[in-house]
Image 1 (cartoon, rainbow, N blue to C red):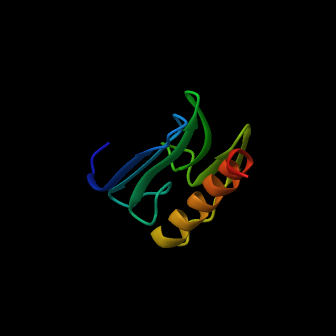
Image 2: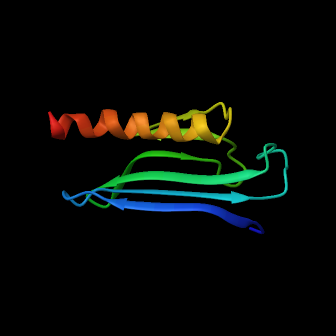
Length: 96
């Protein structure tokens, strides 16, 4: 993949869970008409349980536990908000 990484952030939680967010600027194409490739992942015990990405030939989509659904990309701010809201909701079960 040709592209320029424009954002990368990683956070480790005390319980060993991790959030990693990466965004690249790429040439727009049929799968990434907005010109961004992204991978946002929340991992618990070595397994991805929340993720947003637009992997090759799959377009924008969201993973939550074992479910994968299409995701309507409406900008980076909304993408980050949606992802972090899902992470917060997932973590609530451990923090309440």
